[in-house]
Length: 199
Image 1: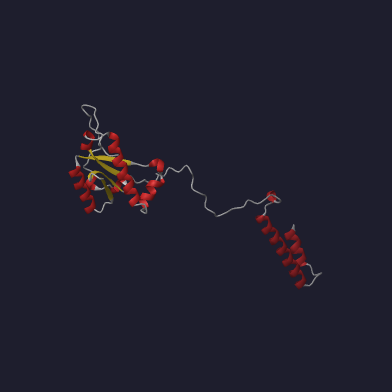
Image 2: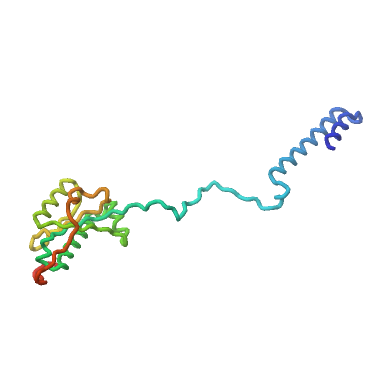
């Protein structure tokens, strides 16, 4: 109907051509504006709140199946022959001394900070050396390889009893330690213990 009306107006000579063309352009402009409004706010959504969108990335899901980061571990080597000479508690004390000394002396190291920062997830690997000579030889190999460790020398006796490395990742385990066996404690025949063992 509007098209027919426009044709009639254009064909009419009641108004000058310039006025007829101006009126037609005004009509078209008004309809184009209404059409644009329609596409911005369709009739069924007029008055309804618009849905806001955002480009902000959503946080990663807490149920992600990604593997957790590997935590470092500490290697400790104790002398097995002390098991037939000292009470078990005394040898455990030596391991504790060496472990704490290695951690404290590398307290500014990134892996050490990560290790002590996860107190409930600490992982230690306890190995055994045959005697003091093997323990000192192992310490020399670790020093040559640049592996930070602490060889505990019990004083005032001056006896090497245990060594402990600073924390390392499993993939960086010192090769010199890979040939050692996990520590197993020898059984005493008579059940006696030495009263002179250090603590």
